Length: 305
Image (tube, rainbow, N blue to C red; front, side):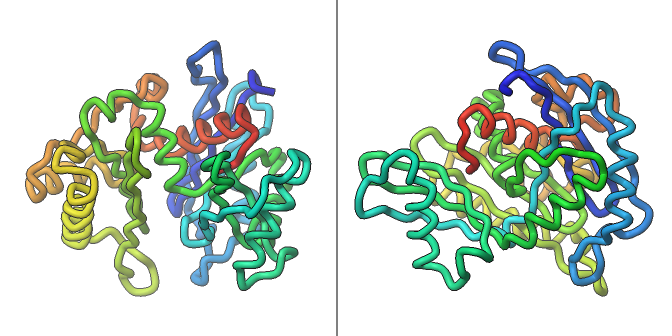
C-alpha cells in the first residue's frame, strides 16, 4: 500500500491539475502531471457541482496521466469542514476508539451522526485529546460518485489548508527562510506555515465578489495579508515571517505588488524538487502536490487529519 501511486487533484474554477507521486525510500518521485483547462463552469452559482461537466473533465485529466492507477485524493474548502478538539473521559479499547470519538463529537454537534463523515487524529494520548474533522456525509458521497464515474478510485479527502501545510511541513527550505506560504487563487488565497512547538498558523482569505463571482482584488489581498502577517508576528514572534513563497495561478502577477506593498521578499522560485521537473508553471501545481503528499502521509499513518 505504502509503495503505490497516489494522485493529488487540485480542482479549480479554470483548470484541473493533477500530480502523481510515489514514495521511494525516504523521498518521493514524480511519476506524472497534467492540467486540463475548464471552459464550462464545473460549479454552479450556488457552489454545487455541475455533475456532467466535472465527470467529463476528470476523464480527460485521467487520460493525460502516465501509469495511472486511478487512486486519487482531493481537497475541499475549509468552510465545509468542522474542526474541533475534544477530550475523552476514559481511554477506549483500540477497536472502540473511532466509535468513542464519534459519539463524543456528536454529543457536542448540532448534526446527527448519520449526517456526518468524521475523521480524527490523536493529539495527546496522556490527556486523551483528539483533533476531529467532520463534514456532511452527502458532500463526501457526492464527490465519491463523481470520482468513480470518471473511472477513478477515491482514496482520501483533505482540506485546502491542510494540503498547504503538508507541503510546508515537508519543505525544510521554508522553515529555514521563515517563509509564509501563500497560494493565490481566483476565488481565494490560502496562507500558512508550521511551527515546531506551536500550532500551525493558517487562514483562508476569501476574495471579494465581482458581480456574482469572487475575483482577485490586489488591494484587498494586500490589506488582508498585511493584517495577517502582523497577527502571525504578534503571536509567534517578529522573525516568524521573513519572506513569502507564492504559489497558485495568481502568484506571477501578484509577486511584485506584494513585495513592494509589504516590504518582504516574494519568491517565485519553486522550493520543491518534484515541481522543478515541471517545465512551465511548476508553482501552479503546488496545490495538487500538497494534496498528494497529505494522502501519502495519511496512508502511511492510517490517520486522516
